[in-house]
Length: 236
Ligand SMILES: C[S@@+](CC[C@H](N)C(=O)[O-])C[C@H]1O[C@@H](n2cnc3c(N)ncnc32)[C@H](O)[C@@H]1O
View 1 (spheres, rainbow, N blue to C red):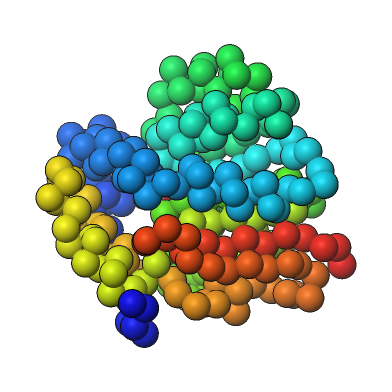
View 2 (cartoon, rainbow, N blue to C red; view 1 turned 120 degrees about the horizontal axis):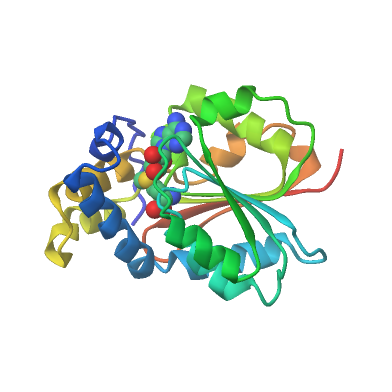
């Protein structure tokens, strides 16, 4: 079931709340179980193993990293294959607890938090490529015009880019409307539906990616509700 719903981007409630607002805390808690329900970590690991075949990455940047809990879970699973990693968690809010950073550190990775709007990050001079850039439930926040700018900035700064976003489909919409039945709070219930309307389908992200001849691109559905885009740099 994947009807051609028109993409609509509207502000999400979580983005309008202060970091410590109880409703925001509740929604971020919901996101942590939603990651598990959507098997986000497994989907990301599979894609990243494909993206990093033949090299051991040493730098990893997460865009819109939220509370860093997904990165911590990734560190727990990946440190055997990727023993030393410089990790950057970028978000416009500082939401990462010191304990999360400490746990990532104990696993042998070196984390740092960058509290910056993504578009300010794009303005910064940077001529080196991060081995892996990831984003989860982040890219769908932006209009096509903003996305084109964002993807161009990411393409100039990454060897491998992976994002996992809501799939814009009838099935996802039904799932988003039912999320309250699983205990999600009001902010998550609203944002889940908005996210599906702003999500992706088909090859929408590949079509916006610059210089595709220099990349291996994969854009596909994963699980019931996730749309993945994986870009692997081939060289100019
Ligand atoms: C839906 S949450 C997802 C958080 C996390 N990736 C996860 O899966 O739990 C979106 C995150 O993007 C961040 N965000 C939204 N707009 C942003 C921007 N323009 N620059 C940087 N971060 C932004 C929000 O603060 C929020 O933490």
